[in-house]
Image (cartoon, rainbow, N blue to C red; front, side, top):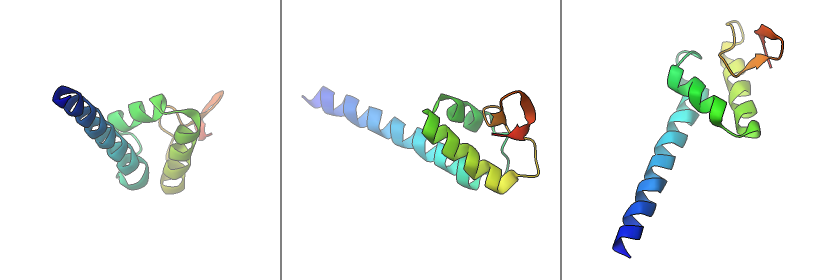
Length: 79
């Protein structure tokens, strides 16, 4: 039972760390081109990714969108 608690705790800790970094990336990062943030945004479920792109666009509307936030067929526009 103790090993199960360790495994569950580790999984929750890693999930919290990844989720926390993603939240920091979309709400507070200095650049929309952070490689780890872009990768996390691409693997997030559709609604979460769309929210992340909206947050990034709100802060970086004058810059080109990062990979994953580009409009379909137009890499220079936000989706």
